Structures are given as structure tokens and as C-alpha cells.
Length: 475
Image (tube, rainbow, N blue to C red; front, side, top):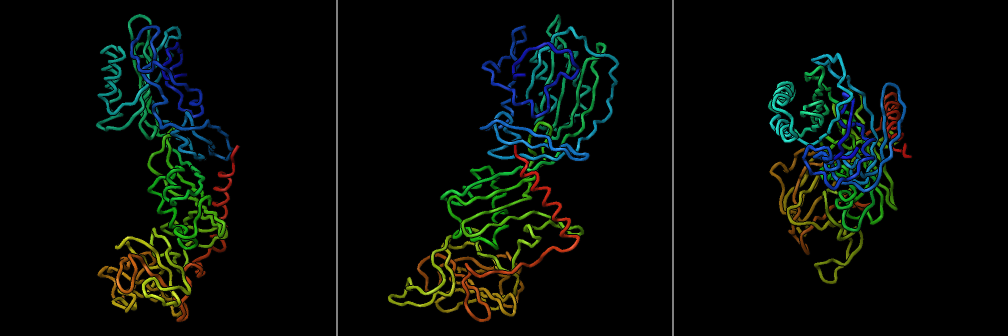
């Protein structure tokens, strides 16, 4: 149907289909805003305006599974709210039975009664009654509908979908009405033997996986990810998964590929509730390729990220102690940028960043130095093990907790970048020391902190294969 059709309908299920696959038949109507009730009237609402615009048509495929209804939808277009921007949706749902009706239908509406169907968004009971009144529904029917819907809606002010049918033969009357909350629950009214009866509708929420493939632009990972459809609130988490394998300011180039799998809650109209959470992440560059899966081992309170072979994404040392920065000077011999004519080994890596940028501890450890340190200016050094230390120089300062003897956790803020000591401008000088010798922070190979084995690995493998199967089920 189109958003403005006037049609004869004999079925008590006169409400618009909630099956996303039927939305592909929708076409925009030029007169969708008309609200007159004459025989040639257009409906007052175009369903396409419910959702954000998309770009491409959709394809749906059923994936059989015991006890589950799984669907895969690819693309954008008329069902853009379901598909998002350039995304791939993969759904796993378990249908919830509706609650018993308060009134039992003993007969069906008169099949000869023509009905005009109207659809729109409403917030609260007052907007429902206003919509009915605008459509010419008689006051008695409005009062009856309000009395039945009041306990369902209560005092809530939610963005709800309302659809109702009004008879166009003789005096107008309300024939059918469906009201759904964002979670799909609500109520359906239909006229039985001259009276309106109510059927409660159960929640239709289901969990889906949306897969967003993307390509790096020449600006930043943030702009690349957001432009491809990844919610900006998930960008930092995505980047943090790869903090032990990639330096986003130095090792990511234009054209490198990434993919994000996001698990979301979706209602029967395909509308997402909330941002969702990452369950899969991959990054492929000319130098390195990694993919990780979110998995919560049985008996553990939180999920962690693991590679295909069950090894933790967390290493004993982060690739960079800053969330965002650019490499301005590499490890090795160089001409000193401040001391004229002096060529000597640069025992760390410089990251250009604004003064005051938070500096993270690259690994768990104990602060062994915090104070002025010659040309390093303000300097913090952390011992992580008998053989591994890191150091942070030219700092503007550090939190009060950063004192010698303090134990710090990986990712804790231990200092703030600055321009102290022999420095050519605001930046962070970062060092890695192994067995008393300076090592290149950009090439140092850190060790995995954990690997799944035995039954735990078997469970992870089954979970991972299920996600991969859904990702690859593309028509």
C-alpha cells in the first residue's frame, strides 16, 4: 500500500503490515498531507517519513535455524531505518506470544464496509484522540477508544505508531485501530458487533547484528568510521580494541579497510532502540590484519575481545599512550630539533598533540620516577616488570595520584602532555625500555596476556563461527 491510499478492506487486521519486507513496495505520494475524508481522499501520512532516508534497495533472506527466525537484509532505501547507512543487517529473533485479549471477537466486521486507512506518529493519549477527531471519528467512538487505550498508554509520552481505519459509508465510525510503542507492544482495537474490543499486543523486540564495512579516508579514522555509518559513540571503543596492534596516527593509511559488527535491539518496524554494542571488529592494512570478537567466558562478569585463535586483544603494552596523536619524530639517530648541529640517538617516539592531552599508562605497573629530569623536562617513568619500563617526557603535569610507589593500571591517566625541558613545541616524548636498553615503541612486539583453552576455547569458537556465518550470508 502507499502512505495515502484509500481502500476497501474487509479484514479486522486492517493495520499496516509490520513486516519490513513489505516496505519495499512503498512509493512517495504527492498529496500525502491531505486530511479530507471524501471518497477520493488521500491518507494523511506517508510511512516513508517515519524513517531516515537510505540509498539502495533491500534484499531479505530467510536463514533456517531451530526455534529461531533469522533474517538478513542488505542495503538502504525505503527500509532505511532498518538498514542504516551502507550497512548489513542480520537478525536473530524469538517471537513473543501476545497477551490474551480483554474482549473476545465473536464475529468479523462487515465485509461490505469501505475503510479509509490513516497512519501517523503520536505521543500520548491526547494526540491519539486529536488524530481521531481530525479524521472525523464521532465523539462516542473517540471516548470508547480512549477508555480502552488509557490503561495501555498510561501517562507515558512515547513516540508511538498509530494506524486506524474509518468507515466511509454513511456516518463515519472507527472500524480498526493499532497503536504500538517503540518496543512493539501496544494494543489493537476492532469493531465487533457494533462495539470496539481491545487486543493487547506483546513486545516484538529482537536482537540483530548490523555489519558496517568501511574504508579509511585521508583525514582520520574518526571521520572515516562516522561517514560509513558507525555511531560516533562507538568509534573510541573500536579504536581501543586495536590499541595493542596498530598506531592509528602512524600505521593507518587511506584505503585501509575496517569492519564493525554491532548488536542492536530492534522493534517490529525495524527501528533501532539505542546505539547498540560492538561484537565484531576487524582492521586490514598493508602491514597488518586483525579481527576480534566480543566474548564473555562463562562465569566471568564482563566480556573481553579475542582473536580467531582465542588470544586476548589485550597485550602487555599499548602501541600508543595517547588516544589521538600524530608521530612527529621516529626512534633512532637524528639531528636534534633544538640543539644546533647535534646528531644523536632519539631514544623514543614523539607524538604531536595539544598541551594538556591525557597520557595513559601503557601497561600495569608502579611509578618509579615523577619529577624534573634534565632535557626531558617533567618526566614520569613506570616499571611494568623486571625487564620492561616505559617513560613519558616534556609533560605539563600529572594527577595527584601519580607519585613514586603508586600502582597504576593499563589505560589510567598518569600525566598530561606539555612543552617542558628541551622541546621544540607541545608534544609527548614516549620511551620503551627492555632490559635497560631503549627499544622502538613502534616496532616492539608486546605479548598476549591471555589465551582461551579447552572447553572455553570450544565455546568461543562456536560463538565466533555463528557470527561469521551471519556476516557471510550475503545474497
